Amino acid sequence: MADWSLAAVLIAILAYPLQAVAVPPLLKRIEQACGWLYRRIRPSAQQCTSLEWMTHFKGTSFHIADLRYSACSESDCANPSRVAQRLWSGSWEQALNHLFPNPWRAAVDDRKVPKPHQLSATTQYIRTDREVLLLYAYFSALSKYYGGTQFEDFVELIETNGVLVARMHPTSKTGDVSHLEYKRVCEKLQSCTKSELEPILDSQYSSFPGTLNLHEKPHSPNKEIQHPISSRDDWRRGGWVVAVGMSDVGMDEESPLLRPIIQPDMVESCFRDEKTGKRIILPQHVQEALQRVISTLETFLQQNFTNNSHLQDAVDLTKRFGSNISDYLKKHSLLRINLEKSSLFRDVRYSNVWPHNPGQLDSLWGTGEMLRAHNEDCDFIISLFNEHRQLTGEERDKLEPMLRDVCRAALVGMIRVFHFYEYRRIIVEPALLWNFRLRHIYLEDSPQ
Image (cartoon, rainbow, N blue to C red):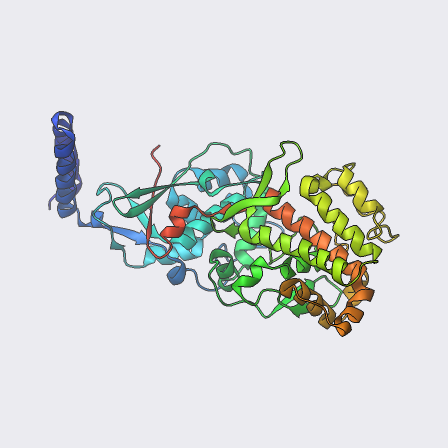
């Protein structure tokens, strides 16, 4: 029986002297010839494993099947150093098998697929797609202790003769990973469903949930309203921002309305960094939605409720947001002082919320009167920020008694949304990856 491995090694050895004396045009032809010969001798070099979103990610369990809430059941997930080694060692097989063991096993069991001739014959690749690559970057970002991550922190994209190759950025920094942080990843991977991840992965996704839970706590009834997003255009409107302000969640909890993976449409926002004076960069749909909230409040004040002190306070505060919205996290910041002194939040129920919880904006809406409001009233308020229209006399009479809570929800929603997109772990998709969204991507292990 022929020893194909030995033959492959001999071909590689013979190619080196030729490469040393060859001029560049001839060198490329020599490499192509060696690759063709290597594939003829070793047919398996023409194939690779394929892990794809539509084919292998099925059901609800992407991670370990017997995960418990208190800790991940596999010892590897309980060891931060080992987590870092697997996620960022440069080996795609280790990383994918660690994050998505169930889909990965299904992919390995499937028949291998042909490898493009443009790729190196002697290098192993994994064929995948945009969705799987974004999930890797997203869940890797969740595993990092710091915020403000970028896709390029984890993956390098290289286009080679019309084929997109992705290499992992290996790192030896294991101190950034904590067991508690990675436990969040385990829980999310175990509990999330494919239908929940699809709207996050695809901005063109046209199917939206019918309802949204504003209040979902143990021993309390849920508060379910119509979902503020019924079309892609609604992301550029203000209703979903107000719904975030209505939600009874803490600052560290993620509303389903806050999308952690966004397309490359970052723009200069209406907010400035107080220290540098530069405009803060935000996703375009977020900038437009925040601006819509501000303009809706101004319209209410100018055209419908000119003498309402709560609405006047809200409009004044949104103007202060323009230069120091990021300062609300600081306990003694001017913005926090102005918020606490305003008629909107100067209330016994809220007097102890911020001074004793710096960095965490508790749900001012959820503990207020609006939590007991009819669901139809919440739907009505959200529609006003979505439609941005003139109020009828009947609508004006209906809205006036709720103005204080409406203003509170609008301001809290703006702060939460800004905080998430400025400080949390979001992934901005590179334009090159977006351009390959309908094509395959080939994962190549990083050189060691």
